[in-house]
Image (tube, rainbow, N blue to C red):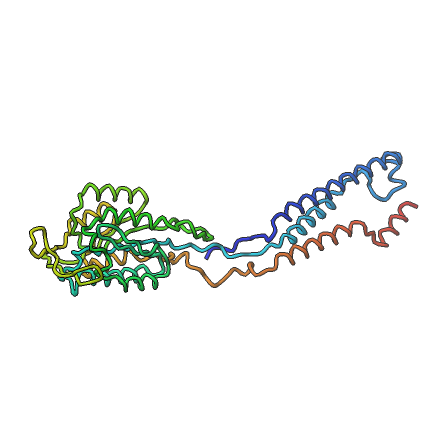
Amino acid sequence: MGAPALTFTDPSLLVIGAALTALVLVGLWSHGARRRRLAHFLGGRRALDRVSRGDLYRFGVRRALLLGLAGLALSGAAADPHWTDAPQPVAPVKRAIIAIDVSASMQAADAAPTRLARAVSVARQLIDDLEGQEVGLLLYAGRSYPLAPPTRDVDAIRFLLGGVAPTIASSYDPGTLMSVAIDESTALLAWGADSVVALPAPPPPEQMIIFVTDGDSDEPDSALDEALARAREAGIEVHAVGIGTEAGGGMVMPRGTYQMGGPVLDASGRPGRSSLDPSRLQRLAAGGDGRYANAEVVQDLDALGAELRAPTVPPEAAPSDAAPAWAGYDLPFLLGALALALIALESLFDVTLPRLVWLRTREAT
């Protein structure tokens, strides 16, 4: 922990006190001028030695200094100074959107029980890695379905994941457009980014999009590259988690409301197959300055999870319970006592001890 900082409840009183102290000093200077005029009226220095014990020509520098310091001490006490702990380092905040592919290809069974079910499981693991950070959720196929902007309420995100089912996307929404998901995720990250003000202000959050998908898409590479360029311009990293196998598998859509269900067929009417496209996902991660991980490779997921976890406060900057001894003093009391002591000392200049009066009288006679 850094050294405690000195703060004032009402700093304006320091200015007022300094102004009043300046007026006192001006008054003392004016009083000295009147004394000098009086000495000149009495006949100057030679006559002054016979009619006055004090030197009316002498300016009371010590008296002015004591009264000036007393005035400053009183103004400092009135401003209520106190020690406050120095601001602690704030760990950078991560804001992430988990984008899950819910297209028909995610119903392939080459990842048990299906790619979509495996994607939901991976998303839950990613949320655990991002615990304490801001996490949002977006589903996508040929269009995007934003479910939640980034929030620290990760339990709400887990609840929403429980409702991710094969029938969540419309049967009239075929295909997979990752560029659309990138743009929609970027908009979600921008939503509410400036709504929270923290003191001390934290560093800008690290923003990222984490795709959980098989990468099976007919989208042109140019559209994907343009979306990635827009994300980079907004300072957003793009990671990708691949679901499925390169060998691939057939797809069976379950029956649902307004959805017939059954095997997914290709253009020729035969049962279609879908395969994991790692090259496209690696292109996605490389273009987004992120990391690619295969969901079935434990080391890949562990490496991505380690990167997602928020950095901790450095040990040398960790808070300490031991505060300096001087930070426990009551500053208003000490400044008030100092002011009274200075005023009392100044008043002693007008005190003349009886013995000194007797000696001066004897010398005069």
